[in-house]
Amino acid sequence: MAAKAIPGKVRCGFPSGIATRPTVLLHAVILAAAFVAAPAFAQTNDPNLTQKQVDCLDRTTAAGAGCDKNGGNKNGGTPGTGTATGGAVLLPALIVDLFPNPPAGAASQTPAPSDGTSSPNGLANTPPPAPAPSGPVTVPLGLNLAEPPRAITGEFVPDEVLVTVDGDAGVVQQIANSFGLQVRSQRQSRLLGTTLVRFGITDGRPVGVVLAQLAADGRTQRREPNHIYTLQQAAGIVNYAFDRITLDAKQASGENVRVAVIDTGIDDTNPALKGVIAEQYDAMPNVPIEKRDHGTSVDGLIAGVGALEGMAPGARIYHARAFEGGKSTMDVILSALDWAASQDVRIINMSFVGPKNDLLGTACRNARALGMVLVAAAGNNGPKAPYGYPAAFDGVIAVTATDAKDGLMAQANRGAYVFISAPGVEMVAPSGAGSDVVTGTSFAAAIVSGAIANLIHAAPDRSADDIEKALAATAKDLGPKGRDNDFGYGLLDIKAAGAARE
Image 1 (cartoon, rainbow, N blue to C red):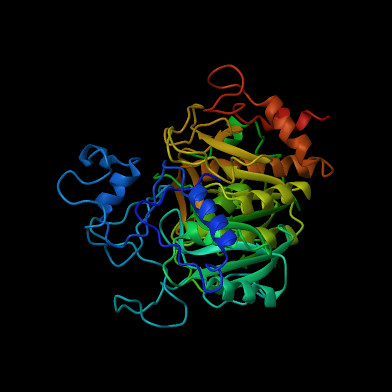
Image 2: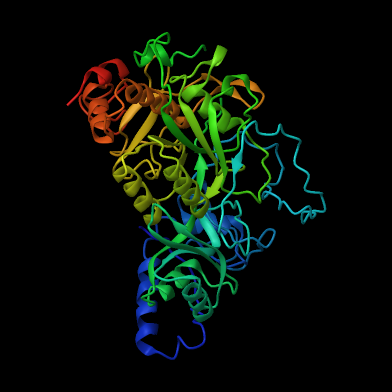
């Protein structure tokens, strides 16, 4: 993966017993230099930088006009002379949070712990009352949590790394002791086929340095930042999707097709989800559920019933809650994916976007090898945004959003990874409050997942490869002739895809 530059001096902080071994030290330093080589999106652990100075170091923000050639602030001061806000590590937001903006002056809040304690600002952590789920909710087992998952802004959690380890709990603890790390969680991952450990960095070392140090230990297999991912909902009439994708609403059915959705919590008392949710799983049980709209809308567009009928009525939704406040982390998402894989689902809907992560890529590749169709939002971060993952991984169907006239959503990501287009602009969908008009590649992905459920219902033996090829071959070409970076192969034509069989 492309790593981020860490400006300024870096103290490696090697644990006792490591620095005395010259070859290991040299190896770690070289790897640390490799990790921090790419300057495209700078990150810093210097607590003295102002946000303006971080923006100047980044140069991908609007701060450019106010920066000198060295990345400093023209209006005075050099990097490292500012004052940090709230004592937080300042990281540029690679992915824009596309939920409605808070009122001017409102501070963002980290989801509160669920142990009944007060938050740092003195306010009691009492989330608004929410309807109880109508069915059983599974929580993760065997996580050995020393610290619960946290939703944090930025590109990755600044004091954690994810590592796959060849060994048992004893080996995990030995690694933690050797490198001065805290074991925050560990579990056996079904899709990764090994032990996944979330190590905490308690002494302020940068993530890149710790990853380089761990690379010198042969008991570690893969080492990644704990990247942050965001749901892809843009700010927002009748559901026109049936007509645009040539799906007859009267004949639409995904009966008994199992579809996993990884998203926010849901309001499963919404009439549109009556009898739709087969099972629920909470991948972040220590974080109170405050938002249910996004997940409710995605589930409803896939398999809703009644007045807000989805693309595949009768489909069975296996819903994994892995987001709060529009954010999640890699370890939480991997937990949700493992659970989905254990439910024998045929389709996994992933309406979120984040940076490239090798662990996520491996999980997606293995899920596809198990015969699952993976559908993901291409992203709502604009034409110049970096590729969005998991959509950009091979074997994942990347979906962009179009409007009622087949025009591309202005905020949509562009790139060679975009696979297909589907309605996703100003769609009426169920929400936590009843219904709402929603826009985003999240919802276009839900339309595609529901449409594919129709294909599997009609032909249960149809493979993921056959479905992907049929979608590409039968899409209605939009934009430049052939596959392009805006529309992919073109607009989904589910009637034609249903007729196309190898």
